[in-house]
Image (cartoon, rainbow, N blue to C red; front, side):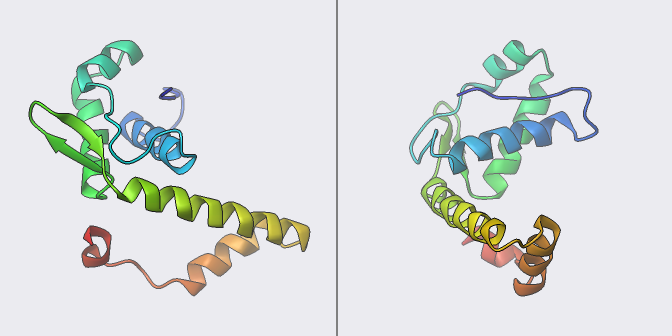
Length: 125
């Protein structure tokens, strides 16, 4: 697993960390049951504060993507499989839209307009 961050970006580092892990899950480079590296190890290798890494892991936990237990570390949940499946569907949709000449912005707007907001209850189920 290669976690990528760019300290020059406006996006907070913790958000970049979480997004990098999500991308690895979506691309099936990580799957359910895989253990994430220890937060101290990630912080040390990237030269960031330990709390920054912990905040990223907590964000993933709040999404239900990671289960965090003392002594066991951060482990990906079954939602990892679902995220990878949806990612494949999205790739197919983007390819179809591109083939039909639909602009990216139009596709994003259609998705936003088509899907109702996800409630907190739905996110945790």
